[in-house]
Image (cartoon, rainbow, N blue to C red; front, side, top):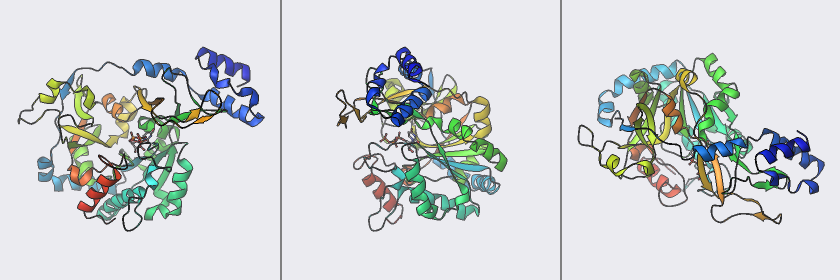
Length: 407
Ligand code: UTP
């Protein structure tokens, strides 16, 4: 794209300020900026602003397969799950493209060391959890790791240096997610350099289309992988390719299984499994009305009682046939470092604009059936979002120690 074309594209999108420093850039920097302008979809910003307050449908409760029922049929489910894993039908997708801004560490979240008496990296904990299943089934399963431009190289180099914590390299695959521009509150994109628009990873909801574009869904078909266990990087206790969960999801004949935990308070800040206009969906905690909070199921328990923990088992065929790709966009308020009015670099102390993200939870609503599968939160839910307090390094350490994991 040449300068004139870039100018026209920016003018149409009300983003002409992007060329503010053009005159002082070197030839290489100019080329880089023009290339970035060419590939950036500014219309996404408008679309996102409009879909940010997307109307929701009619919510109804969706019951979960509860711990007591799972316990009764544990052996049956385990046999189904172990068989599917041994047959190579299950893969795992680690969502590791996030920025981990709340944790405030420089590197990717997975390289964070939560050890107390020895180094215990988050990636290492996750791979140890996978190894439990490898030992149980006698089979390795493929691990696909989603990274972003911001952390790809460091993530790859770290895992290679650590020899994938014992996981065979031929079972580990990387793919990149897309980036989206970040803007101020008026929708004007920020510059992170005088020659570069500020971008951030476009949310975890792009994993499937990014895998398709990287040829990894074709790879999955070639290998006979039918199910993908999507999981977040920051829950250090979660079971991955958990045979009981796999077995129950396959047995239910649904398009997706979702691990859920019983909420610890009626308004706990987690997304809650439900039906929306008759399809599976997730209602955000702030969308729960008083009536929904007070609603009871047939047993007298709260009807909207199960929160998602970002651990899903998706059927690839269902995604290929039902998932339409286009998802609602979530506007997230964040601190965005940028080049200020006078060309100086600014590292804001408080949020100063928006990032635009698609989220995995919106994929669920495009599918037809979902099995919410209850897990014990004390044993399977230790997310690390912050340094201290709720969902933190501290709380995760306490839970690891309770579960007999030495740190
Ligand atoms: P979070 O929503 O907690 O975001 O991600 P984050 O980037 O890790 O942390 P904050 O909000 O900046 O503090 C939940 C999961 O989704 C992944 C994260 O890596 C984590 O596993 N994720 C998030 C992506 O893979 N890509 C994204 O663009 C965003």
